[in-house]
Length: 118
Image (tube, rainbow, N blue to C red; front, side, top):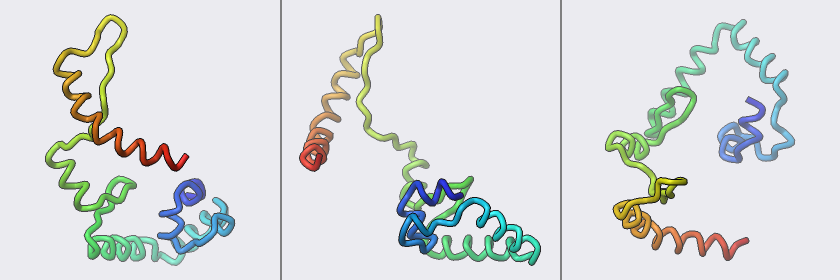
C-alpha cells in the first residue's frame, strides 16, 4: 500500500495526502488495518467505499477502479492504436503497413506536442 500511494499522485489525492512525505509506512498501515479488524468494522468500511464509488459511476474490481467508459470500451473489444513492426524473417504485410500509416498521422501530432515539452 505504501508503494501504491507513493507511485501515483492520483492515489495520494484519493487518500487525502497532499505530500509524499506524509504517506504512512507499511507498519502504520498494517497496525491501522489490524485495529479495524479487531473492531470488526473493516467490512462496513469496504461496503461504504463500494457504495460511494458506485454512486459516482465507478466499479471496483480485482484491485482496479474502472470508469464506466472503460467498461464500455472493453465490452466492444476496443484496442489501443499501437503501430506494429515486423520481425526478423517475417516483415509486415501490405495490410499492416496501411494500418501503421493510418495510425501514424494523429500519433505524430501528439508526439510532436510532447516533444516540444522536453
